Length: 318
Image 1: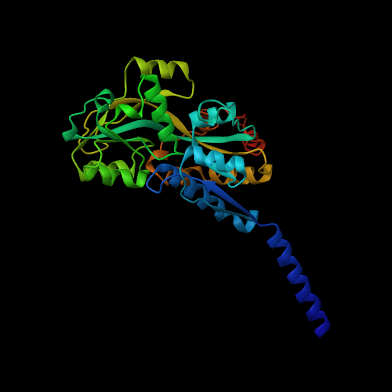
Image 2: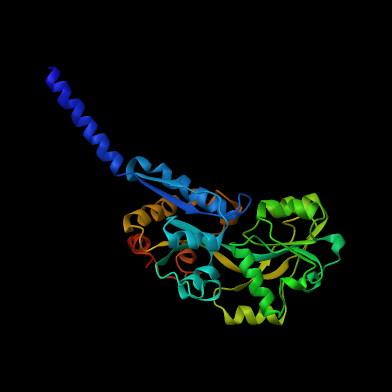
């Protein structure tokens, strides 16, 4: 009897060890904790972890520096997946702009998420009424490694300007910039982000502020010359102080990975999101109008990961 019990115990231990061996831990790069990227990663992990008993996949989504930092971490093998602006997905895969000489050949697209307008919030007492009015003022251009910082540089280059044209070009993270605006340490903050956004809501409720339009010939040419950009509108009434729609341009938030991540892992992550699509859309207001057909096509310039492609074909979407 004791011998049988020993065999039973040994068998159970072997099964437990096998199950443990099959566990896969994945990490998703996000952004600042007040931004929508953080919510995207946390939301995906929440859905993936619901299926851990079946798939063995355990997911974490820490706060990071944003788009470029996430892509670099994926390229280095430090993260499995991440959220990145559609323009930086393009540049990373094609080895252009910030990624010149550093082409990320193994970058793979999974799906796109919400639209991200290039958003400018200025203190009302700054007197700024348009983007052009910011030159000579104190502006938070964003933290190094973030997509918003890099996109700001693209906008400035298109206008024939640079950081030197501001009285101050601070490099605060999204979590810090709203307080800086309220404390009168800067006149304006820049954020490429989905709406509504907590950081901007904080900023506009702390101090009288307005959202500025980002329009003109330089922006028109930027959009016309680059397929990953599009004109965008931030609805009026979303934030205190801005009652009318604000015209700007923007990108898409995209979800990316590496060709080195196994097909079955990417498949299970995609399945967790799209098999629970209504639940996913309810996790943040910026997701409310997402459509599956748009998410598997828009803003994706790197090749689609085979694991994602398998799921989309099973659903008859490709």
